[in-house]
Structures are given as C-alpha cells and as structure tokens.
Length: 80
Image 1 (cartoon, helix red, strand yellow):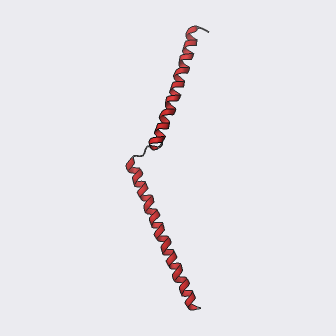
Image 2: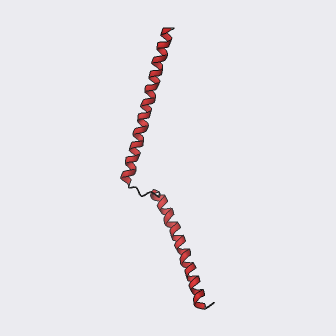
Image 3: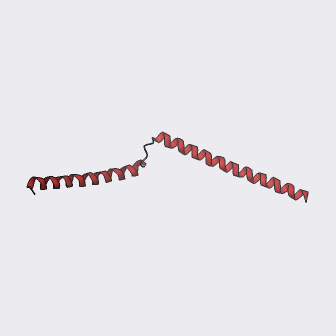
C-alpha cells in the first residue's frame, strides 16, 4: 500500500471516531434537556393539562358510581 492511502485510512478513521463521540454526546444532552421529541413546551403543557382533566373526570366518575352503588344497596335493603 502506498503511504498516502494509509494516511487517508487513518485520517478517515479518526474523523469517524470523533463524529461518533460527538453524536453520542449531543444525543445524551438532548435526552437530558427534553427528550427526543420535537414538541414545543406549549404542546407538552397542553397535553399535560388534558391528561390531568381526564384524570380528574375519572375520579369524579368513580365517586358517582360509588354513590349509585350505595343508593341501589340501600333500596335493596329496604325492600327486604
């Protein structure tokens, strides 16, 4: 092999290794500061608010079902 080819291979390997290391560091920083999604903070806050609304609605529904069960059990007890 010619010395020029050897130098080109070594230089290419160094550039490849540096790009992999830099890419890994950038990906780690991106994961740390906001994940991989490209959603803006406004979209994330809107989704969070929607999930919280659903959770509160389900909690209210659960209490309503409990109340209905109590009413039905009281009616059955009075009939007997």
